[in-house]
Image 1 (spheres, rainbow over the protein chains, first blue to last red):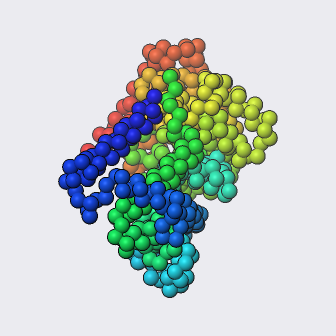
Image 2: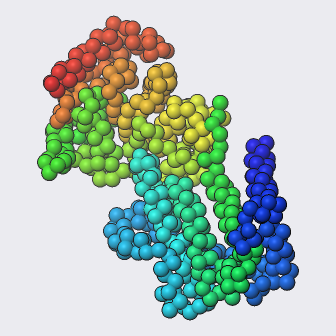
Length: 260
Length: 264
């Protein structure tokens, strides 16, 4: 019931926005076509890129390419960042060792890495993956670290009292205890991945949603810009939703209702 | 052999560059299978005593030993029941009790037998697969007590285990702990600030002074309880009405009251 009514609310709001858009651009002409394209134009651009292609490829090729870069950068960042954050949270020595470097690197915006990434790895995908990695890495580390620090001290003491050691401690205490914050980190990392991807693809990319934006800007083709923007939104929302599904399954204890 | 022994234990904390004496030459022995409660004004270091027996803190001078071995780290031979339960929120009731048994390396069949036994004893039947947050505070503390008893420890260390519970639940838990302790005698060190609770549960009550904590006096409850036969009464309020109980309680009260007066 709840899910159904929420979905219908979302659809209703979307429909209202499109109607408003239609009224503003097509019916009344309040917003001129140079500023905001009409819904019909955007639809036609969508059909054009989906069937005939635009900027070196068809829509699904661009989308898949962007998805692939995000998936790779995000996955590597998470696989390195989460364990590093957990380690820093658990061991004072690791924190003392890593934190100074981390504090220094942290304020550098991921986009500032683009020039260096290009110098190191050229204009290809590798440079873009590196930039996405840098952007996604930081929230993964920080939130995993905070996750460990947020575990109730008595719970950690109880684990020591029970004689829980090493592997079992990491797997059954440290990780599940930090999991809520780890997932907060993953969500922020994913968001950062998409933001950075588009920026990275604006520079010298053959495929990808960012390259469509770049190409359409050069062609002064606002309707195509909107198609690309909408698909960035759809991709970001879909991957975030997927992550939410994983999160719910990973922490069943948070979703069971109270008894009695 | 004495199960828990504090020998000339002092504990200082460093605060604002000054050494603050928290515990002053504590000498206390808890005999095997004896239930000893420590009462004292807040800040007197009674919890620190328990934590030193657990191996979660250490004396500045002196030694704490359990079953003749000096305590150097926490371990399942000294099971702790924490005031805030300290269950693993991501583990079910069954898994919470099982966790320590697995760490001890007990075989599956034996673990299942032990868990079933304590689930029955602590009235947790039907809740085996529930997560802690689905249970009331009283039930969560029952799980924590079951987890501690299931370890079959040489000493049970309880730090105001009923302090976080509402009054009604606390009474029920006190009655259940008495039943458990009489049926299943263990060495228990029980920290509380509730005088009635100490008199009702313990064989001996240790009264501590305010900071720096010293052992002020030790009262023998067990001999009174046995000669007056408290255990024939099922309900805590019936025991609490007995003249012998009232007498002991007011004695401890007066002793503690002197400590509070000393504060000002």
